[in-house]
Image 1 (cartoon, rainbow, N blue to C red):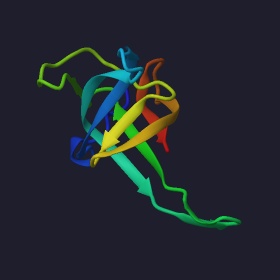
Image 2: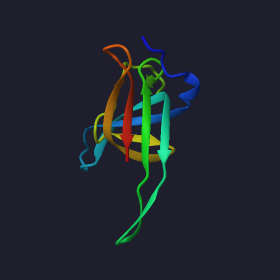
Image 3: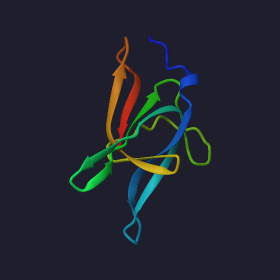
Length: 119
């Protein structure tokens, strides 16, 4: 089996918010999972178009199969909870939408890590 991503590289913590329903005011209700020991790569860009400058920032979230820890908001460890398309990732108090999740395999049939495209 390939070695996991080094913990020294997994320096970020973020929150995964999965929609669980709506409240009586038709606001979306979320369940929150804290992801510790992940890596977030940020690409900050501005694009010029017909309507002026538009921010086209993109991010890549790396979730390791071995070293990433999943916790509730209260700090209790829970089983693995991977994001799905259109879930929210909150990092540095900014919400990003999950656009794609890709499992990355090494030399086994189980994923080595997951790469999550955020927008």
